[in-house]
Image (cartoon, rainbow, N blue to C red; front, side, top):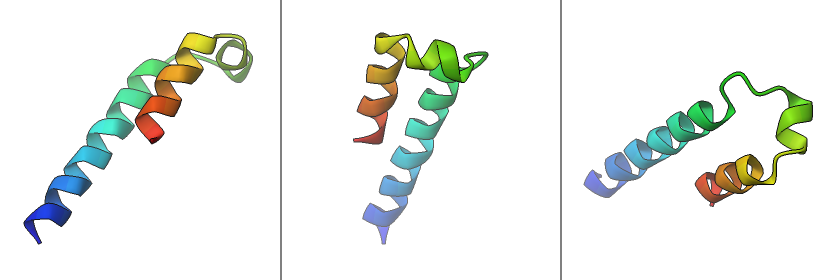
Length: 45
């Protein structure tokens, strides 16, 4: 049970990071900026 809670906290933190990386970034900018793509992909892993 404790492990599940920690995992959910980790997921929420990853989502928050992704939101910060992509704030004010439209699809075109995202698709043309490999560093943002890499950062988002890393958080999804």
